[in-house]
Image (cartoon, rainbow, N blue to C red; front, side, top):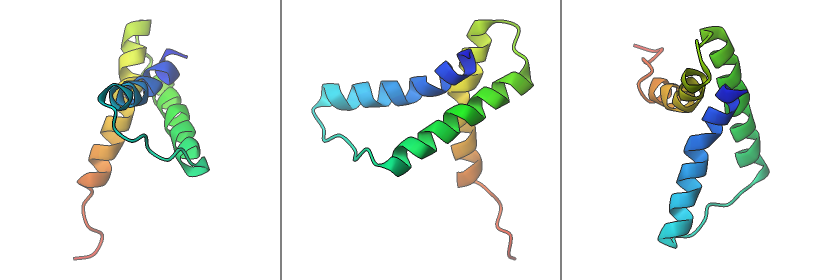
Amino acid sequence: MVGLFGACLPEIVRLRNLLLSNDALPEFSVTYFLISIIFVIAAGIFCIGWKPENAYKGMWIGASFPVIVSKLVQEAPSLTQ
């Protein structure tokens, strides 16, 4: 459960910063919510597989998961040469 909560934290912080800066909020479409739910569930599964020793580490793993995935997607090697 803490992995799921940890995966929600970066998005909560991002939305809080948007609200405080008075910038326009993003459009909250069904796609946005579906992708968010998929990320949260995947982070929870990743956290279970990691088997953290305590809740703090589990939350940290969950919060790190979206960053790890986005970094892998950005720097993925090309399939064609």
